[in-house]
Length: 108
Image (cartoon, rainbow, N blue to C red; front, side, top):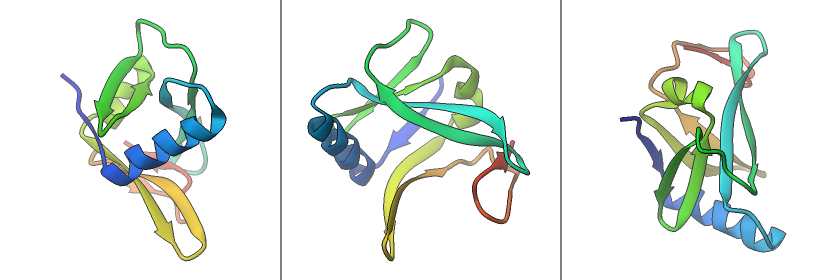
């Protein structure tokens, strides 16, 4: 069974953006071929869910993972971090073998 850890900070941000937006079930995560290292994360709102998506829930927030991304994300942690003026979701993914210098893409 796949695992995905959602930190309290990530859960709080997911709940916040959904509250601001006024709708949505959670955060949808997938991956796409991109960048110089192979794949990049794709984030979207989950307004509806397919039976194939894998659902993870923690701290009152839901994350839905596309079926083709489950293996690549298995064991990952979704966090929300602030670095200077930047705020973003960070994936601490133990499956990543290499990342590009800009941090936009990864290899598994």
